[in-house]
Length: 212
Image 1 (tube, helix red, strand yellow):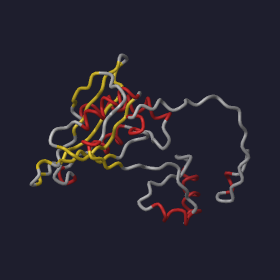
Image 2 (image 1 turned 180 degrees about the horizontal axis):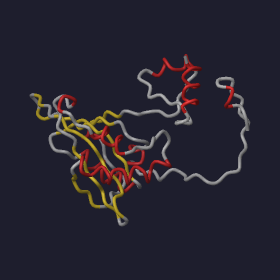
Image 3 (image 1 turned 90 degrees about the vertical axis):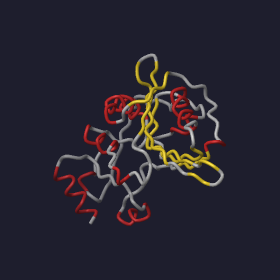
């Protein structure tokens, strides 16, 4: 099955690689696939978390659907430095920001914020909130779709906003890249440097990949 798939990908001449978005990762090694990047899910009690990095930039709330070009500007600037980030055209942004009511599960529509730096937009966040009430009071949840920023100060400003939303006590996030780690103040990952490397590849499946 994998041999046929790779042959058809090659023969179509449109894509250089075959990549899967795994629904259950143990399935795919049976067919020769391996992990290229990992995804992290965070579940936090917001009252027990503190953002220690000093925030920077001015945060403003925006309309998500009308601001996709701003999001794309930040995302495309950061993507070359982030493992596992794929390119997004306008259709992909429409998918990311799609917001049919039947998919909200009782939560709000998408909310969004942009943090502006001295040279323009430095980061954005996309989230929903879901109201939950108990006999002890509000236990609302913040459901974060993406937090992307160019520097620790912009990350800190966005995460501080998300942790301080009224009537919420929990936050669930699937960060793009190392968002939470950088919210704690870590620096930007090292930038790639030019290298001069020659690789010999031996690949029996498909053999056309064999070469230097």
